[in-house]
Length: 306
View 1 (cartoon, rainbow, N blue to C red):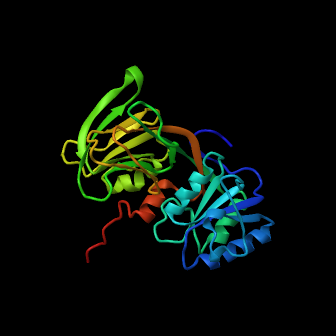
View 2 (cartoon, one colour):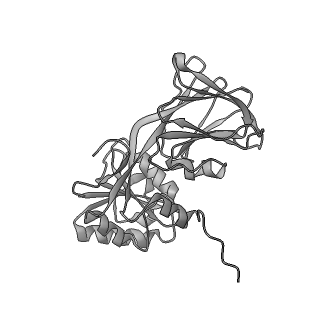
View 3 (tube, one colour):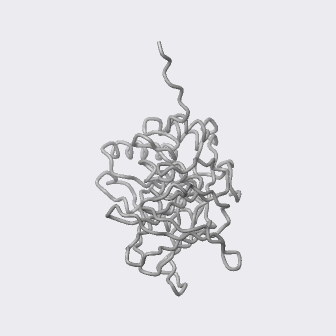
C-alpha cells in the first residue's frame, strides 16, 4: 500500500472480510444480508470475537487484531468505526464504515445501500483515504511510561471526570533543547485532535475544521476559564506535552472517546504523531466538503422568505 496521506486506489483481491459491530435492533438482519453477500462473492466472513452476540450466531468469530482480514467493515456509527480502526491500524487494513445510525460522519455508506457500496469496493471503484493517527503516552515524574501507549484516529482528551470543576493545565510544544512553553490555563480539560477528529469533540468545543490532507494537530481547551485561550494549530511532527498543575485533582485520559486511563499525581501526557495510518474506504463521488454540507449542514442557505 502507498505510504503517506491522501487518496490511493484500493488494490489487491479481497478474500477475507471482517466485521466489527455495535448492538442495534437492525443488526441481525444486516449481518444476515452481509453473510449472504459474502457467500455470493466467495469471500470468507468473520465477526470480531469481542462482538460475539446472539445477532452473530451462526457466523465465524475471530480475533481480528491477530487474524487481520483484507477488508474490515464497521457496522454502526463513528464510534464503531473508531474501534475498528484501532484494531487494525498497525496492519494497514482498509476500513469501510456502514452507518446504522443518523450522523456517521466518517462512514461511507448506509445499511440501506450496503450491497451497492460493497459492489463498488469489489469492482474497483473505491479509493483509500489515508489518515494519520496520534500516539499518547502517560509519563511519570521520573519520565517512565506508565502502561501501554494509546493510539487515536480522532483525539486524545485530558479531562476532569465527574464534577464540573476547572483544573489548571500547562502546555509545552517540542522536546529537548527546543521545548517551548505555550502557557498555562484553567479549563475542564484539553483536546488534542487530528484533522480527522477536528469535526468531532474539538468542533463541539469551538475548534476549527481542518481538511484531512493538512498535517497538523489541533489543541482545543474545553471551556477555558479565560477569554485569552483559543484553539491552537500545531505542526503534526511536533511533540505536545500536557502537564496537570494541581496534583490533588485526579484527571483522566480518554482516547477516541473509548479508552480511558486514570492519571496519578505527577503524571504528564506526551502526544505526537504515530507511525500508523488508517485507510478509510471512500468513493470517487464522496468529498470532504460534500460530507460537511450533507451531515453537518455546513453553510446551509437559510430558507427563502416569501
